Amino acid sequence: MMNNKLIVLGAGWLGNALAHSAKSCGWSVQATRRQADVSEDIQAFCVTDTKLHHSLTLSDAYWVCAIPPRMRQSDSHYLETLTCALEAAKSMQCKGFLLCSSTAVYGTEAGTYDEHSPLAAQDSKRQQILQNAEQMVLAQQGKVIRLAGLVGPGREPGRFIAGKHLSSSSNATVNMVHQQDVVEGIMCILTNWHTAQSIYNLCHPSHPTKQQYYQNHCEAYGSELPNFASDEVVSRVIDGAAITELGFQYRNMI
Image 1 (cartoon, rainbow, N blue to C red):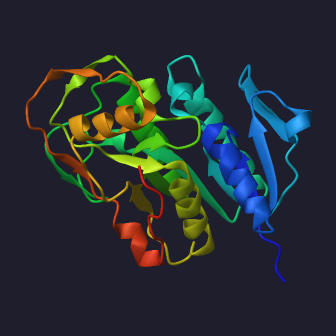
Image 2 (tube, one colour):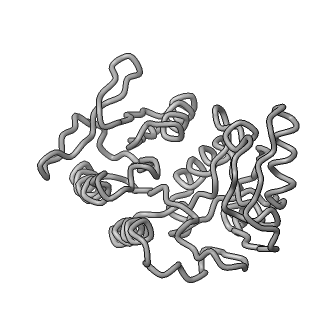
């Protein structure tokens, strides 16, 4: 039986869940963070003074870059790290490189956004970094998965928005996806690598308004409702249906 191998860059909230899931499926896995953690079997992978430091040994593996969005700030060296990662992956005969990106690459205007929709103008540093990262990976024949807002273990909406003033509208639509659906979606792409398309959105097909969504979560959690900046109707919907053509199903409620 062929031994599937996976390298996970960024073993944080999402990457660690992916690593554990792949291991449970019998994959050989190496996971990294900026600093090694022997107790969790996490290896170091970082760039200092333009030099990459790592001790990865899995050749012929799939690579998933799950470095969390907060790393994509101007001082995070995210693009430099990604450049080095792509070079390292190539030198280690990488079977495929998958980048976890964000549906924030699309504009904020109302409408339905699928994988063929135009991207937002690169007016912000975040947009420049997100889009440049995608272009770098696609140019190396890698693939991109654009994630909607993430929920799951430790990320209960009823807790993290309790009593807050939100700058969005109460009638804006919600675009969210559960951690476990993301893990299963990534595994689905990896196991169907040669037939999978280059870019996928991952977003649960349910799109309640923020008022409905947060009210349900706050009531269930027993927390104070947030308030909103406006009640303007804003229907911005991320279409995450394309990945179901690979046999994937959204199974976890948002």
